[in-house]
Length: 95
Picture 1 (tube, rainbow, N blue to C red):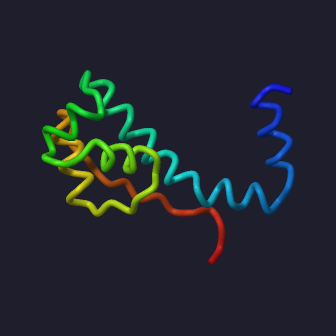
Picture 2 (tube, rainbow, N blue to C red; picture 1 turned 135 degrees about the vertical axis):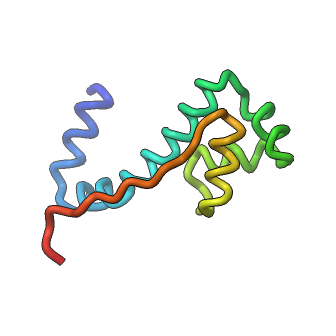
């Protein structure tokens, strides 16, 4: 069974699907961080040196194992040559 088929099968469960959707923004942020670093041509170690921190902190950010503040995210982006912006989107579901 392929990974995609396994994912599709798991997402048929409403509880799994709800949790997957709840975590989606965290995965998207982690992916964005990794993409910025890679596009800057930096390793985690090189980025850590630019930010005067440890490689393990960069790894935690990229795995989604931390809850970084806005300033941390701005510093990370700037060190990679990027600028962050925020975009608000209205949910289609009633509260």
